[in-house]
Length: 332
Image 1 (tube, rainbow, N blue to C red):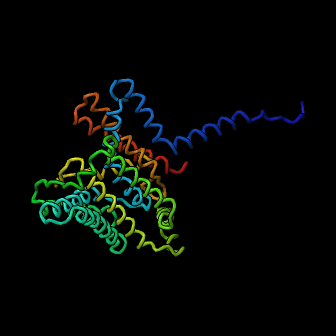
Image 2: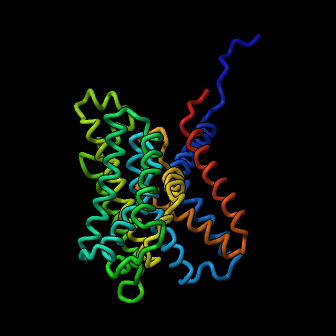
Image 3: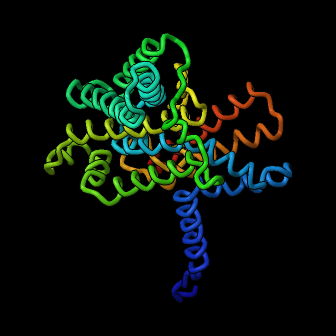
C-alpha cells in the first residue's frame, strides 16, 4: 500500500472562473441599467428605421426630462430610506400657482416663477416635517401631501387649464433654435443633484442616514433637519419639473404629472438605488429615466396599444424592484 502524499489538483482555473464571474456580476450590478439601455437601443434600432433618427432621439430626451428631474429629487429621498409619493401633485401645484399669479393676479412672470418654486419647497418641507418630527412613515406623509397638493391645484385653477405665461413657456422652447430647453434644464438639475449628493456635507449625511439612521444620529448628524432638507429639495425639483411640463404644454393643467411619481420611483430603482436606503447615483437615475422614455417611445413606434404600454411599464417597475430585493438578499 502506497504511503505517498496525495497532491491536490491545482485550483487556479476554478479561482479564475470564480473571479471572472464575480467581476462580471459586479459590473452588471453597478451598470445594469446602462446595459439594459444599450440592449433596448439595439433592439429598437433593428425593428424600427425611425428610432435612431435625430428628431426621434431628441423626442426621447424631451420625454425623459420631466421624469428625470422629478427622479433626481426622488433619489435623495430614497437614499435616506424614504419615499415621496407627492412629487407629481407638487409639480402640478407649483406650475398652477405660477401660471395663476401671472395671468390672474398680474404678478411679474419672473416673480411668479419664484413663488412657484417656493411652493414646491414649502410642500416638500411640510412632508419632511411630518416624517422627521411627526414620526409618520414617509409613505403616509407624502400620500397625504399628494392629496393636499392635488386638491389645492384644483382649487386654484377651478378645475381648468390656465395659460402658462411667456416666461414658463420659454422652458418648453428651443435654445438657439435647436437645443430643447427641457433637456438643458434636465442637465442642469442633474448636475446640481450630483454635486449635492456627492460633494457636500449634506450629501454625506444623506448616505449616512440611509445606511444606518441610529448610527448617524449618534455620530452627531442632525437627522431630523436632514430629513426636512431632503424633502424640501425634492419639492424644489418637483416644482422645476412642473414648470418644465407647463412650458412644454404652454398651459398649467390641474391633472398634470398625475402618476409621474411612480415613473420617478421606477427610474431611481432601475438606476441602481436601493429602496432600503444608503445606495443611489444621479447618473444611474438619469439612465433609468432614459430607459423608461426609450421603452415608451419604442412601443409608440411599434404601434403598441396604450393599454398594453401601461402593462409593460408596470412589469418593468416590478422587475426593477425584484432585482433590488434580490440584490439586497443575503446569501443562504
